[in-house]
Image (cartoon, rainbow, N blue to C red; front, side, top):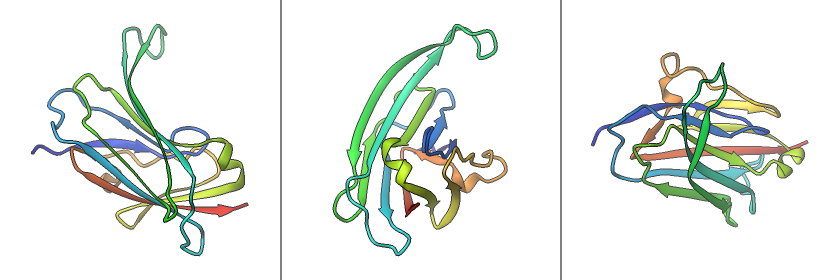
Length: 156
């Protein structure tokens, strides 16, 4: 199975994780996102809403405008009583963008810290940028494989 790494962006008012898909040869197996939402003491937080979406952008240019968006899929889930949530989906070849968003209304009560594989990948109350893939490849989402995140929410 070929592994494809992608650049991620973390944010609260904007996407929690955004992935720009590289063209062609995407894996035929599901990309799995497993997450756990906890408070600052490590206690699970229930009923935090997430949306995992996949889009294709085409035509026009970012500078000149005219870019069109096709929504490929949008999945919604909430963290359970143990703070767990997960998504599993095969990412189609035509995908150019993936995002994992946390419910914006809930974020007015919390600040966020996110970790992947035990590595701190961002914190704050506004948009948080992840380092470019070349600078910090551990933060990349691997399509066709399991990706685990721990999201710590601290009450303001």
